[in-house]
Length: 173
Image (cartoon, rainbow, N blue to C red; front, side, top):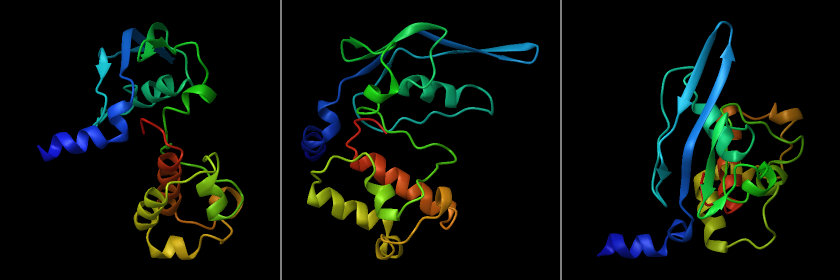
C-alpha cells in the first residue's frame, strides 16, 4: 500500500511515457559503421540504467532524447506527441541531462545552480537540494566558480549540475 501511495504522489506519475518507433542512429567511424537499435518504451517513472561498452551509443542515445542529435531513422514520442523534429530548447523542459564532463558558467555557484530555473521554487525541494549538495557547497553559494568552474572540483560541478537539472523540474533526468 505504501508504495502505491508514493507512486501516486511522485511528480513522475504525471510524466508522459517516452516511446520509440524504429529508432536507430548510425555513426561513421573510420571504415566501420556502428548502429544502435533501441527498445520500444521507457517506463513512466523509476530508474533506468543505460550501460554498455565504450562507443556502443549510450551518449548518442541520450543526445537523441534531448534533441541534440538527429536519429538516422525512426521517431521519439513524448506521450502522443512526436518530438523527433522538436529542438532541444523545447525538450529540455522535459529532460534534464548532465554531461559526463559538465561545464559551468563563469559566475557564482548560486548563479550556476539557478540558471534556467523557474523563479518559483518549492521550499521543500530546495531544502532537499541543499541536503544533497552538503554544507560545504551551501556555505560557498556566493563563491566564484571560476572560468568554466576551474575553481571547483569535478565532483562539485557534477553535484551542482544534477541539482540544477532537478530544480528545473525536468520529468526525466
